[in-house]
Length: 143
Image 1 (spheres, rainbow, N blue to C red):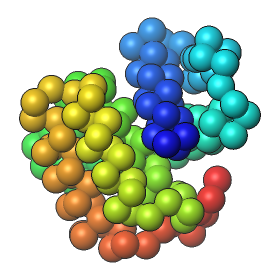
Image 2: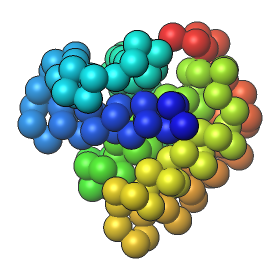
Image 3: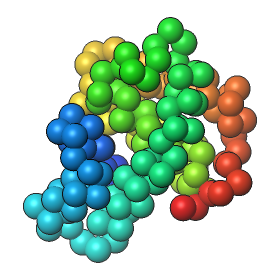
Image 4: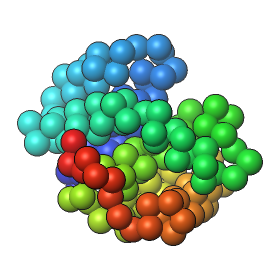
């Protein structure tokens, strides 16, 4: 449950940074302080937001490759950032099973996206996993 909350907060920080043109560190810290998070939840949020930004070019390239006819820049901000979080987990977090990363992304899409978001998110991530990452992690796992 703590990780689900942390993913939700990380999504909000990514969204806020993108839409508001804030530095990700500032967006993340403001949410952490406003919500008075426990240190383990705050650490998970920081790891995810900084990890997404550290690997943003690679993550966006993977999304572009596997979201047929929907380049990253054409996606709604919420779907784009849900995918970024999930791709970060799939590619760089060996402590998070692929099925968990995908399920959590679909749940975020149900909560924050539109009616078609969960199916779209699931399709892109499933395609990426089957054809791109092939169930493995990149070499620099566990940032």
